[in-house]
Image: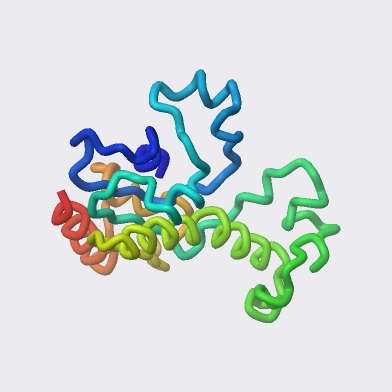
Length: 190
């Protein structure tokens, strides 16, 4: 995502297409912050949401996606019990947004409720935002959702990367069919 909005989206023919998996809309200091100015040779001139909303990104076809269980296992490693939805003391107050993430949708599990909320806000919504912005500005935009409940692969954050880069992995026939399809989608954009 950041490569698309760098230098206010000026595309100096560096990109012809862009693709990414699980884009993270995480904390970003203000674009005039000294840390950002020193970090990027072509500074980010706007925050990602504003840049994408205003069309200040490299106008190229995009393929971005996310996984069904993006938030799985993330909060369990947080030391703050108020944020760790896997903590024995977690309550619906810990996850807070019960209107949009009813506990009943997560089989009564506060941990699963928090994982779903985190995954959607941090990764899934970012992929939707990027492809939506590209489409809004008349560009070809493709989005995938990796949903693999199979025994070998999962739908957790980054799980689809094993399908592309772990050449030693042995997959069952259902996984193999999905991997062939996804590799075809990815290579057809290039």
